Structures are given as structure tokens and as C-alpha cells.
Length: 277
Image (cartoon, rainbow, N blue to C red):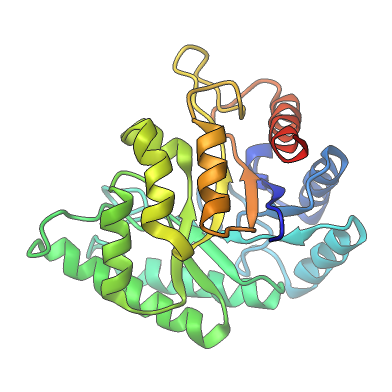
């Protein structure tokens, strides 16, 4: 079986307002040793975002592809995180929903243009009660986006968060589209659930997992450097091996660490050592 690889969620290094800023981030990731990157692709939160077609040009995106290729980097995926009036994601909120659906679909189209095949996001809050109107809204919006993903050949991957992995898996099964998958974040599950759930969730979601984020959580330092927090890495990585996952571990840190490059280096060294043992 192929081994997992180590990448970097580029927004860890900040916004990418132009090609030069994105090129610098690509250079940092390559110099550290990452073989792939996951850039931000919507002009929202980490903005301006040169990869968003409403900000950058097609020529900009072609230039970014050339730079990544010259550095030996592939795109593990792209992030199209939006927000509703109330929730992170907002795909279960009716207000402004059409814009968020269309914006996400635009991100899938741009991802295909850039040669990628995965877009990740937090979709919103998944109601426990299926009779909740928000559940039907979320089901409809996610189904529409996944169907568009099937048309352009891009997986729409929902990131693990507040809901349990079991509930997320059941929701994906209800949508019933193979282009709807999971971006697994063990740190999110640890903070909102338990250490055991972080590991067990891998088995619950299985081959629905197409991408992962690698970050940790230290309640004392409030930093996310891998290996310096509470994520049960050995058990988690073994679970990924058990299900046959051979994709990326994309290092992510949104804590505002004053030495973000140093944190990424330590995360990379920690993960690399888990493979070299």
C-alpha cells in the first residue's frame, strides 16, 4: 500500500492577494519538504484571494500552476469555506443560500481548471432532528453542489466538525452521490468530541475520507503544532492505514502562531518521523 504524504493548507501562511504572495507560500511549503498544497480558493475570510475568478485572472491561475509544477508541488485540494449569517458554512441557512451554493460551484469549476479534484468546506450545522427545516435545506444544497461536482469531476468534501462522524456518514449516505466525501480533521473531532471518537471516526467514515487536515490542539499554549497537543497521533495514523488511506495529511494552523513557518516545520518533522520509524 502507498504511504500517506505530507502537504500544507496554505492559508496557514495567510491570505494570497496576488501571484507573488501565493508563489512565496508555495516556495515555503516546498522548502519545508511538503509535496502538495491546499490553497484557499474563494474571496472570503482569507482575502483577497487571487485564485478566485472574481479577483484574479485566468492568466494568474495558469502562472500559479506553472510555479507549483516547477517546485514539484501538486494541489491536494482547495478550500471554499464560506459563512452564513449564523453558522460557519451556512449551507443550511435560507438567507443568502443561492449565492453560497453558486459560489461553491464556481470553486469546484475553478478547481477543475487548476487540475485539482477536491474542494473542502464546513457546510454548516447538521441538525440531529431530520424534521428540522434546516436539515432539508442542507440536504438540498449539498446535493446540488455534489451533483455539480460529478459534472466537473471534483469531489466535494465535508470537513469533520461539530457533528459525530457517524452522523456525517449517514448524511452523506442519504445524499447518495459518490462525489460527496469527507475531509477528516482529527483536531476538530477532539475539541468537539473525544480522543476515542477521533480514532473511531476514521473507521466509521472509511473510504468516504479523501483528504485530511493535520493539526493538533494544546489547551495550554492554544497552538496547533502537530505532536505538541492532545491528538492521539499513533492511533489516528494507524486507523488511516487500516482503512487504506494513502492521501495527504495537510498541515493546518489557524491559531495565529507568531512563528508559523517554524510551527509548520515542526509539524512536518513530527509527521515525517511517524513514517520513517
